[in-house]
Length: 59
Image (tube, rainbow, N blue to C red; front, side, top):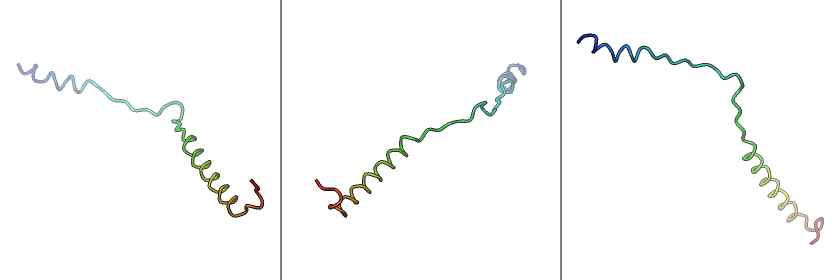
């Protein structure tokens, strides 16, 4: 009876968790968001430049 009560403890103690670093570095690609932000800023800057200097950009 005593050996049955120790069984869950032995099963839980038998598992071992190992944590190791990956061989290759983890890469997080955020190019899409950065590119969008840059394009929007450039578009706003260009629009402002056109509005401030209409003689340079005739329609």
